[in-house]
Figure (tube, rainbow over the protein chains, first blue to last red):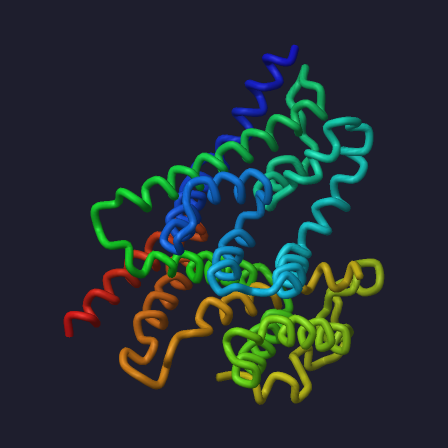
Length: 253
Length: 73
């Protein structure tokens, strides 16, 4: 029964509703503040559906970033979605016509709702995943549009609202730090960014930073403890377990 | 490739934080203090509540408040 599947999917998606609407509003306001209206909010949220990357997108748009910078930045920022796709390969395999949309809509939040593969009784799995994705998508678009509209009529001065983007990334960074066993990748990211910022200036440092990060992480492979569990249980055999190497020392501001 | 996918998120998030603060002038008034203070609040709130929305709302509110305070001073 499709009606039941839709209802179950709605229930499953509820935890994401608040988050996506509030965050979407933040995005919409930020976008509007930069001179892009409701149509932009709708189009970006509907066609990109990229959460935090859309926040970065506002900066890129406002700053007139090149297509190359935009493409590379999107690739690096959203690289984690690679894993979501891999995790869902078997579950999405026979989804037929729904598959492209399912892949498109696999954001952090959607992933968190579908990853356990738990589908309520009586629901067709692929339809269920489809509607969960669709509801999330709608919440996100709604938030963005509402934010863009609000941005025009808010009675108080919204100076400083762009900090919501910094706050978003900081809180995700903190969450990652808390749950990570090895902080070397995080430190590498910050250090590489600061050094490149100083060397290349605020408008040009993203690409060098991403190249540096890729190179450094590849070189430091053994020390990041990110090898698959079958190789070694905790990824570390060196007694010091700490980040060695001179790459980070010069970078911290 | 899979290895990079595993470690990149941490590095990229660090890069993004720096990206957000790239135009902050720490050498002239207000010396990036609103950013530092609000940033600290975001981190502390998050360690306390582990809730992204709470951290964002709290930090952003403080930042907007501090901006106005600094302008008035």
